Length: 463
Ligand code: 5AD
Ligand code: SF4
Image 1 (cartoon, helix red, strand yellow):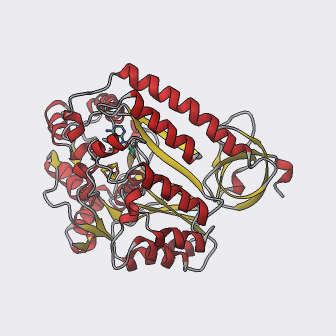
Image 2 (image 1 turned 45 degrees about the horizontal axis):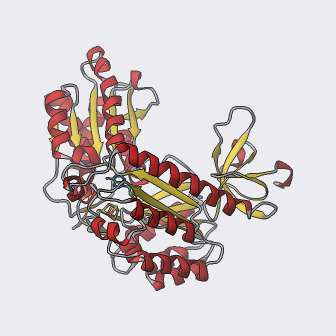
Image 3 (image 1 turned 30 degrees about the vertical axis):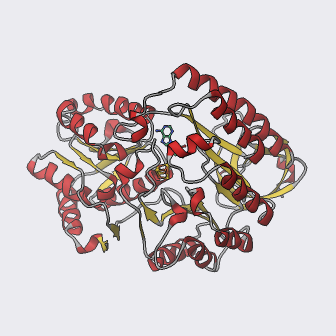
């Protein structure tokens, strides 16, 4: 069901908390782990916090409310969140009225919720990601009744519209178009913590995109755990086409896609609207072995995957491709792993995000008998990255000497000189000399050097 937060008691609680906070200068510290979906959710969390009278701070020491937006995809992400949470214990000792909330995918895991409830007494509330609109209620109950709340929803089939949102950037924006996942890949926790697939309505999405473009946003990234299985009043290809038809100087990206939902119609729309629909596709492979793909429940095989890559390259010649790969899935043999290397060699991705398989409690793969040792996972991932580095570099080298359009994104963290990070339509990172005033502008730059992960442009050619 699709409903509006403003039609439930959301607004009432927001108003009540704002009234309680009205005489004070309250601050909120929000830290986000994980994927872009979480980044987008954190913009809603900040929007609600602002509506309740909390201003953003980057310093947890001065916060009246701390919210961690967590990720559960791998063990490592959970450990990082728990270690950060541990640091807030002393803050609560100093300030007993401090609210500490844990949102995101970890908060939707029963065993984590129970652990936080019993062992982390300074945690005020946990709230699974589909229930974000209940934050004002939980904050109110903590402030007024001193109540701790631990919420895992029973019904994860809703889409809630109308939550306030404070966006982090002026030139780019995330727009969630669907939530959840029905695929149950055997290694993945997402379907358990984010629930089944449900899509926003076409009109809600179009209105949001139109408003963003009117506000000067230059890059819209459509988000969903399984973005290309969008099923509102139309399919994903038609939705893309309708967004691309909005007048304005902006580009559209999307992530993350499942290979099973890459239709010919989608490739056709991308080719017709390139570069307004950016010529970039993140297409998670996970493994190049048919046997492992089957055990992962991925529903495609090598042949089908490579045929999608071929079609994308044939229809959109300048397309850039990236992928996710898991090494060391249970029972993965050296031969299976070589099949993965073989596909990487054939597909020539621009970027590969490689992960060591991490068992997730409650998923079928965690119970499989032939778990692979950490030593083997590390050895395989190192080999994979070494091979991929050479491919990425050789792909990047082809751009040297060419003039490319880039959208300037941010200041680079390099301290030695003023450098900006920019992105090509194909999502390649480009560094060149520049300053803050360039952020959010499209520029033509001449590439003069290639790295493995980035390109470099000469500042003399920026004009
Ligand atoms: N272990 C390692 N990597 C995982 N991913 C998802 N679940 C796991 C897991 N249990 C990876 C997949 C996915 C990306 C977002 O994270 O490659 O595409
Ligand atoms: Fe996880 Fe697979 Fe769904 Fe992606 S498609 S979120 S990997 S279950």
